[in-house]
Image 1: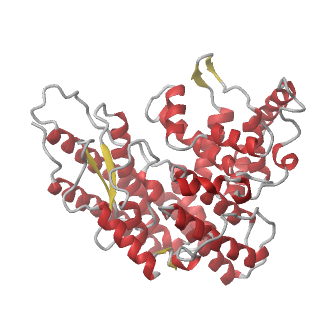
Image 2: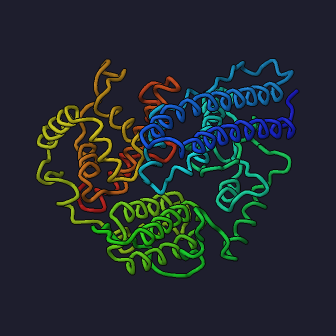
Image 3: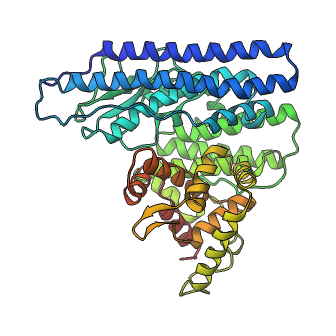
Length: 481
């Protein structure tokens, strides 16, 4: 006899998960408290040594807590159902050590808005993420294919309220940890009743109403700044985000304010739920970027452009949003010659020149200093080094089991051009960034979940990271296809 979700089971899971996160938070805080009495070199060595150890230890604990919760929820739902296919849940693999090292280096160097004092919250986030991955990876592998939702706490911030308002809509989307912020205590709930998933006390509609009310009152915040101040409540205007400009001569305090504004703008694009919000937000963002002039870096403007394009794509089924795809409202793009390289369908109809160029470029990339290439591409795109490295190795360095045998991927001119733009930092396009995420996620599907290449590729595209489709759309819009 199939049972409904037991809210007490989820409540127990949440308490256990929060306890593990708090232990990790306090353990990292203890390390930071010891650092003032040490020399700079000794303190850095201790942090680089202990922080990864703590993430591994508490990450393993959170993964096991999540595994037990998933298995218990599954067993309870299918109790007495002799026809249900058996499945044993597994804990997600360990947090990659390079992620921990990247956290420490970013905090020590003040990169991406990080500081050493923020590491305890970042560590707690990493630990919660491993629990998320355990739930979501099992949901993907399980023949029952349950749905899951991010459930915020009653005192959650507006960002978590917005994420929670989406309800049980996640089945093949990107992992929930992509939605987390530092010190986030949301928890992922799983439900095997895919036709009518629910959890007592969890009301996505009420959360959305609360989010809209906060939005109207101007109290929606992320990173300590008001998203409403970006302009979600303003009206009208074409959604044109200007192309990136060079420069960035603002002082320290001004740079911090601009960085916060940029992060909030990107978060706000992620939060929009209808065409009216998207139009109004894009209009105000344009105004601010135009007034800011050279204060904004190329990377910041590129990130906002990418967030706008992602929001437009997410809402493309809305008839009002489809109108945003017209050329006069599109993101301003550079001339094709500068953005796409030397060859196209017109001057290379048989593709030979593009093929030869791609072969030479792939070979050159394989011979480059990997650390330098990853850092340069990460700096130019704003994507973390761990993700860039995973994509770089997946495309260019590692061999895979393909239809043609165990070999490298075939060279692809468009892919080479995408990577070239990101590597040089010149004329980076939104679909270039999609390439990095597509390849990293595809790599996870192949080597974390054991999927064959074609299935991993298709599943990644289904999640919304279809680089080839975005590339073709961009080429078509620019007369290159």
